Length: 636
Image 1 (cartoon, rainbow, N blue to C red):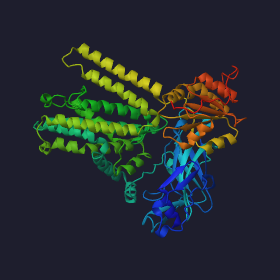
Image 2: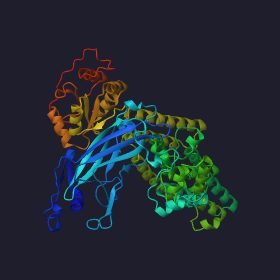
Image 3: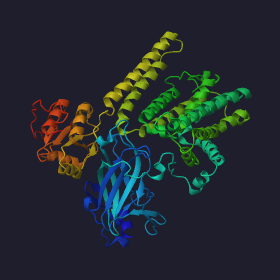
Image 4: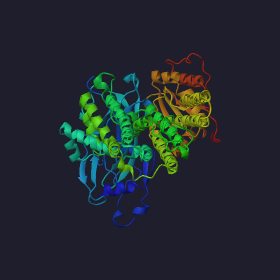
């Protein structure tokens, strides 16, 4: 029971690197009297974390294994610990290496489970003691040499005894292990379906039946997709088209809805092809449902597309597809919807739906992973038919739309409201992007917004040449802004394999005999961003770091860390940007580089620290003053 109380108390804890202080003011009295919550225990005595990884082979994917050794008398909680109770273990891979996890963590041995009846009545607690290893399949950067990869990450755990709980924050740097030494989980084997969370056992069992059952689930799951929040903005568009169709002959209503359904189903068939790329021999890997949203370029493209559509809904410009989003003037609202507009509405609806996975679809899409392309296409076709069913039904029975108001000015207001819903969708899509592309994506939207405004400000009464010039200038501005933004503000192609800063991480790297490069930076510091993009994360510096085994550590001061501040002060500075290089042969005599730098200055400093392999400044006679730093002063 004491461990459970400690877990509950940890919710009010304040943590700093290396220790945890529990705030128990709200727990004094009653059953908590006399309990020792063990605050302030050193993390290193509780849990030690190590990691290793393997390169992919013909029969298994690349694998990452993270091992935690828990001190005697302590336990930690599983990665699958249910919400509403103690803190689950969280394992993350740092983005700098370009490595991403493509499957769930699997624990070996599995956690011991028991049901709590005291603090969280009815909650199943999942605990690990002794030693546990989590395995997961990973995707390595294309063309990368596994021997040169530095895969780092973080582990957030909660180590408890019967009377104490301590928050533990650990970092790991994975070592390359021999091929096949990390056994893939069953679902990571080629051709085996991956597990799908959130489905009931009965659903999974039913989905393992015959093909007819799978097709039934696909049809029903597609129908439910219409209720998912991803597609509500475009469903609003379809409501507008229903209103426009009211009073038209049955044949036209049917053909418009058939065109919409054709656009919708065409994307599902394209997704079926993407899901079978590997089996068709067209690519090394396939893309499952929603997996396109794991690609940054696709998500950025969707942000731009949805943002441009939102501006169209709000009247900034008009999409040049007849009947796609209505037109901006109330007296034109009764213009007929075009077949192309209906088709592209269906296309856009499906594209927006792919991040969502409603009930029934989990086991269905898992089933396609082990099926031939023809069965995969059939499954996706039935999902598309299920999603299109309401529109085909209305096309067959137009009397169902008589409840809608007649076309009129209300459609302008409705369309504009849908524009704000699309803006909210843009916010959601940006939230799914990696932090490194936030800023360049937002800058790109400025160019896209200007392009839409410029195109929309050119009246339709202008000549075709004038409208073409407006389109040309607008598109050129958007494209140039996008490329310039990602070139200047986006992640470098030569990002160093940064390890997050902590005093323990720095001391461990120094004690291992490595030359250590520490970059003190912050997101709000523009000169830091300049150094990072054009001085530090460059091809030349990356080569020197790689060839000389330099350990790069990132001290991110964005959210004000007292630990980083104290380290800066010990080095004689409180201003950033600031670089500290700890040579392997003299780790207590660092080379300090404040302010804006050039790549040559950094390479000279690395050469002075002994990193001379592949360093063009190794013989240039560097003039680096050791230990010189700007005194404490105002932050820049």
